[in-house]
Image 1 (tube, rainbow, N blue to C red):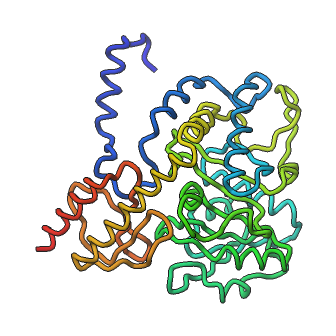
Image 2: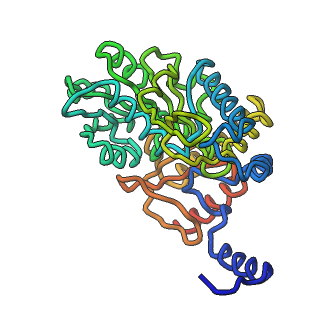
Image 3: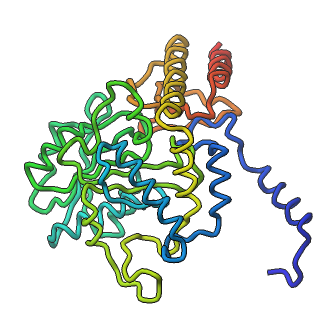
Amino acid sequence: MRKYGCSEEELFSFLSSVKGRDLGYNKVLSSMCTLPHPVAVKAHNLFIESNLGDPGLFSGSMSLENLLVERLGTLMHHPAAGGYGTSGGTESNLQALRIAKSLKKTSSPNIVVPASAHFSFDKACDILSLEMRTVPYDEGYRMDSGQIEDKIDKNTICLVGIAGTTEYGVVDPISHLSDLAEERDIYLHVDAAFGGLVLPFIENSPVFDFRLPGVSSISIDPHKMGLSTIPSGCLLVKDENMFRELGVDTPYLTVNREYTLHGTRCGAAVAAAVSVIEYLGTEGFSSIISECMANTQRLISGMERLGYPLVVQPDVNVAAFECEINLPGWVISRTRAGHMRIVPMPHVTRDIIETFLTEIGEANV
């Protein structure tokens, strides 16, 4: 730490130069985050000092968290869902597994996940000392329904399905998982960090939410397709009493017990997430999702016309191709199988798609 502070002008000159080294989103085609909506930024700044870890001091902020849970619970067809604002899918997934582990006591607990599972489950299993059993893909890069039961035994505490996989944008057979969860009395967690704010706005999309009776919890990330500020996630549970499994005493705060993972929690991000939901409504979200899906289909048709086959038809705005080109100036990513992966987020406009297709076409000449 320097002995004497610098001037504000010097400080922000330094910060501007540092920020200049960050990549802008203009040619970023790999990220599942996007530019936050202006109302999210404004709301975030308005609640910048809010700490949801001490709700008695910030009762207004807590009311916004309750509203966020109610709005997302209703979107998931369960207005009475319990929940709270998390830092994102990693925390939500970890907390869901903590609940599952507490609900079913066994000396050798295991969970069953698809091969598409996000790496947050690796972290969670390491922290919680859980065995992770992985079900291979089927031909559509979804969890192979025929192999799930082979992984389940008396020590299985949780089944996991993904609604909008990170690599291929597909939805696992959540309905089948729900049936198994009910038959075997096993906790079912749905990781809808990405698809949770996409699938409800697409006609005839696969059912993945609380309409399925076996679903116990769902993770959703407003900082992805919710256009909120980072970090912003939400964990929803079918019965809020499930959170009692996580409660710890907090004697010196304005509440006596809490069940969240973080102690100090960012109220600003919750305010930002609620603000976008309230500002856009279902019509606004439907319009944004429709545009993203249209851009995804344009990308698919353009790539296939150039001779780069689509690996699998996605359920959300993620597309993977058999293409080995790494186009200079563009940020794409690759799946574990080596396929080119592109996510047409709201910042990826039709003009950006057309420019990318033109340049990749020229690179193929």
